[in-house]
Length: 178
Image (cartoon, rainbow, N blue to C red; front, side):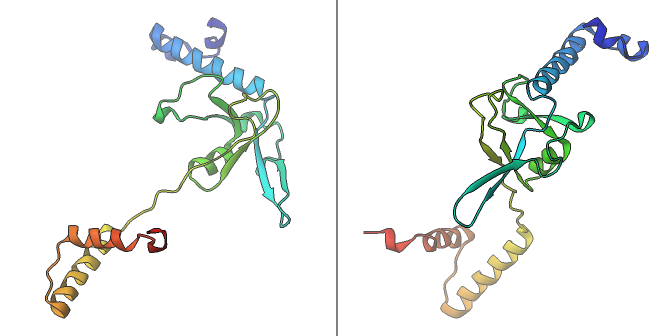
């Protein structure tokens, strides 16, 4: 552990307590183990489905799976914000661009199917859903307009909850009902 911290300047090193040094060193070891297991290469693959249904797996579309040591990151399969751990089993080597595209929900990650990859993620594809942004000001204005329309046209006064219930009712697929 001391060898790792030898490259740090004394002022920064001495400002750390023993527990923080242990945490930093454990993260460093985990990152090294993941990079080493993955041969210091991005493990993202591009999955392409042809018109005749054939699936073709190509190297990472961003880095072409070259060894860019300074551009590699460790991706947590189960995000730390969702209870994921800093372990080798939960880590995956990705190039910085693949990682950013995934985190911003702009693309998916298809993990390599190499034997060095943990079996629980080998060959799987992961994709984040982009959160739907709702303009609540616009929704409230439209709801107000609809309530006024119901009141003026049919003499019916509806609350927001009643309109919500009607909207849910209208989403039911009546072909599925017996």
